Image (spheres, one colour):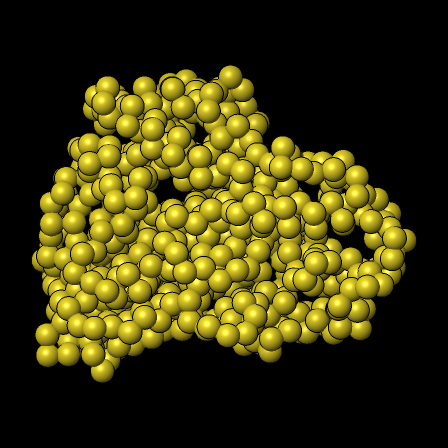
Length: 544
């Protein structure tokens, strides 16, 4: 979206009632619809609190979309002594593999060790032992150390010169991090929360050192609404300081994020069969080369960033760094800028640190209470995709202590996400559905899990496919708008159907999606053109 434009001025109005589900009083207002905010809203609503979730753009459209898409303990955090963070991450990894098994799957990683590596066999072996020790009760295999020959037999494309051996271990991957966010938002709504995307917070009112209300504007209609709030959770990620700037008190900036960029290429000659965790020759920083979505995801970088998080893109220097380092590890790859389908970048919402290396800035979450200036207001700094559920539990615990009343205990430790409920039974039914190929069923289950049955049922009314391969149903497009809060064409393509992450970014299907959305949301010709322009703007940011 062009800077300064609201969705109202840019794409016109949709038919959503700007005041639908909004009342004037809430126990907890959660600001920010990324993975942390969505998880907090779900947890709080499940405990019986009256909750509203406000997101200024689309759910999951910020930092949550731009990660390395790993659910991992964070092996390199051990180098910086963050053992509690690794322990927490490894246990949350186990939970997510159980409670979101349709989205989170085990992933084998290899670490090659070269003669000139800064981290030798002894250090890597110690890290592996610690990782296994901290992964108590895990179901993934333990690590193993390999000779150079053993590693090359498995991965013959790997650079042989100077190879001393390697290590293999297991973590997990969430192919579509955007879907993990959406499922938490759906679960929050099902538990009673009001959830609103394209709702920008424009004011937080504090009186007598206590938070009293929140003002937000619906970007589709321009309607401004004020709601009373007993607790406000600022979970806006790298935009935390911008939310604090709306408070009617002077609030000290707390954020100091770093930029991480990734590139996406097709499988190349000698490409690994499993993920690789590699030490860059240029600066010793570890980065990933990951088989992902039938492509290869390479990243990430780590650079201090002070600009608008909404404007961040992968720089030429970062792209060349990732290409050069990958070619150095897999010499037959021959990757160049022309090999890249798209690149993306995001800003990690880290605490402010003006000195020292970026890698040393803590990745653990910080729940900052502003009690001296605004009792009932708290800001979330940091946090990882992997640990969002535990962070949410801790935040809600703190929030409920600010409230009078009886609330239920945390349920998210045991309660599956919606797509994981009765998953095996749903999979059998989807596979047996008439007219649904194996490829279509696999795709539906990998994106929606058990909720794919809702789409199958809707396909009786909304028939047909939007792609030649007949794997993307017309009913899916309708479902995104009726059940998954999609408002714009970009929402549908990039954060619901996930076709925006294909090499061609689903361009052949866009015209059909516009036709369906036009009927479903009453778009006129102007709105259609504006939506197409907005989609092109989004995809332009992903080009190298």
